Length: 152
Image 1 (spheres, one colour):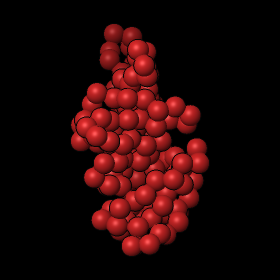
Image 2 (tube, one colour):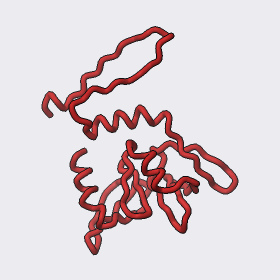
Image 3 (tube, rainbow, N blue to C red):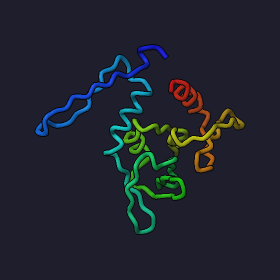
Image 4 (tube, rainbow, N blue to C red):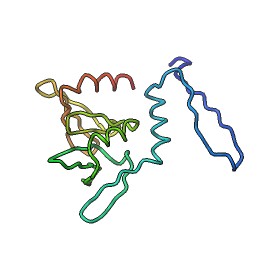
């Protein structure tokens, strides 16, 4: 690590009448800074999900992957599947700062929930999630995913 890899942190205490704010000054927005931003934003983002007649508020970090099947969208948690009324492309926009990555036309995965990868036939990858589920990465997205993971 060189000196440019370190993040300088400066904290200013302000009066109670002033609004708190976080300013990030950087030469380039790198993956480490993106993680800091996602952590700061995580307090505000809650996704509404449903199981039977119950409504849940989920944090992005609770979701392993998101899949669209038959016109419906589902959140897959550690041990539970939830339904969402939000379209996949809208979720992709909402979660762009939260380590979610599109792995196929119908699926987004949380990169922080991947345990390992294994190659499959037809130049695809199989992502083994921390909850044991296996998710296929379409060959169209494999090279982008590899580049993204190498940058982190």
